[in-house]
Image (cartoon, rainbow, N blue to C red; front, side, top):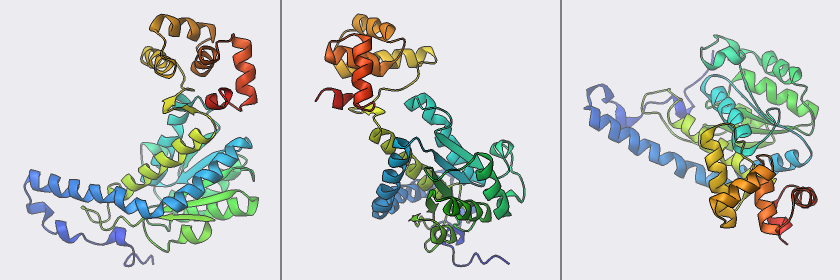
Length: 297
């Protein structure tokens, strides 16, 4: 029998004991007040998050992968962050991977019992051929999901770096992982519904992990997405705006350089800033390992 009594995410919230009697506005206010505490709860754990970011950046530099793995809402959040990386940072879809208990179909419909299997967590990592240069981030609001525990245990045997993200202290996944990020978000407005504050905390942490590690490998210049993929009209216009913001050229020059660079925003910016042709820009970016700022030094 699973003991949930010690998990703060399962306790009743004293502020919402009469949730079913509140007016709509009263309920919204208390939810908003509770949500505002999430970012504050994360702040004491920035040191552990920094350690995880450094591990992920190092993995990327060695052509390793960032692999998120979880069940239910936690798993969906990992998949969500993973699928946003290619359009935002121009990464290969295999560089950041999201795995969810029960497979892809579990993203839109719960697969009952999938999260209770340690062997399924291990098997899913075996199927993507986990390597020692990868980083595995296990997500579980409760901190005790067997699927995630099994995955992290296997990752340790392979020699991959392991990170746990939980919303309870002294979690089981935290004990298994090399880096434990355990943010206490407290009782939910709706008791036990960890799709609320706990999920918000996990999403904020995932934002930090992927974004700042991508900064670390040169996917950002200033605060601009210089490796975004121009796959639709909105992104094409965004690309031009990025080029203009980074170089202070007009839209005509931005369009010209983006065309010369075959749609590559980073190349276009480098050509303008170094006043060089495409071949030279490519060579300079290769020397700087993709960091625009380093080409200027």
